Every structure is written in structure tokens, then in C-alpha cells.
Length: 260
Image (cartoon, rainbow, N blue to C red; front, side, top):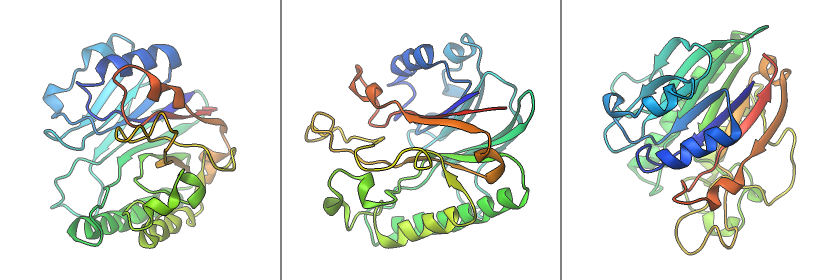
């Protein structure tokens, strides 16, 4: 089963580009971020015509996450637990049942946090504390599960073409990376780094200053796996070529193959 995460940066603006990639890559499940659409306005038809079940957790003009799945999505939950006052649409999860295993799929769009320090950075770190709690619960369940999406975290210097330019950015500040490591240290496997080492692998290139043309990218889209899921994964790749297509998102898909 092929499962992908893709920050689409506006479902209406990138609908054609997304559908082209779906037709090329043929993923079974996709976690989308930054759909920037309320649920009722989400364009379901193009995905349903391709055989996908669609579940959304939307928000007008900002944020928003969705799951597309060629398998039924069961026990859908919208919103990250831990703060009932949080109105930002950044989390959706559901269970997918394969031939041999059930997989809990969690799609998320972690806050950017800039400018840092400041209220937006405080919100990012508080959100990551809630994420840690949910991740711990997934780990304690001892079942196949994954948390995938735009983490807005550059884990290591090798995950940026010019790490020195990100030193004070919320994506690379030590507090952000420490919070990310706390989640990893619960026992999660980061799918891409489990199979690919070294610099030069990115999932985001800014629209400004010719970042794509100069390959001035960062790797901020990640797939974290519980041990029970990590044992089933056979591959993890970044579809960097998608960034060079017409009217692209500034992110590209990251996908895994998993035996379910």
C-alpha cells in the first residue's frame, strides 16, 4: 500500500497539479495539508471519481487537513486532543484496514511558529506538547500507526541547503528541534532517514529568490512510524520532481510503501 503526505498549499489553486500527481503516482492513501477550504467547499468530486474516500477538517482560507483513501476510513477523528479552545484545523486521523493489518493514519499540519520568539512560537511549542501526548498514546497502543504531514521542523543541519540562514527561524530553533526529538524518542522511526542518509534531500522550496532553481530547499515533511508500522514499511521516497511542474505547491509529496 502506498501512503503519501502532501502539503498542497490551497486545494483550489493546486487541484489540477494534485490530480496529475495522483494519476501518475497512484497512491492508496494521501494526507493533505493546507487545503485552505471549509469542509463544504472542498472539491470532493475529482477525488471520488478516482476511487478515493474523502474526509476533511477544514478552515476558511487557512490551514485545513484532509485524508484521501481508496480504502474505507474508519473511526475518523478531527482535531488534536488536549485543547478544546483550539480552533485551528491541523489534525485528522482514521483507521485503514488492509488484508493483514489495520493502520491508524494521522495527518497533521504543525504550526509554523514565526516570528520567534512570540505568541505564534509559544503556540507551536504548546501544540507540540499535545502532539507528544497523542504520539505517546499511539505508542502505548502497540499497534501499527503513523503520524505524517508538514511538521514545519528542520530536524538537522543536513536537512537544509543553507542551515545558517535558518538559525533563528522557528523551524530550526533548538526548542523546536528538541520538541521533535522528544516525540521521536518515544520510539518512533522517521521513515525517510531510516533509509536515506546525507544532505541534499528536501521537500520544500520557497517561491522566492529562485529557491527551486538553486535547489535551496529544506526537509520539513516527515512520516513517523510506531515500531509495529516500521516493521511493515519497505520504501520511503520524496517526489521532488513535482516542484518543477506547472503551478506547483512549494512542498512535494513524501510517500512510503507499507505491507498491509
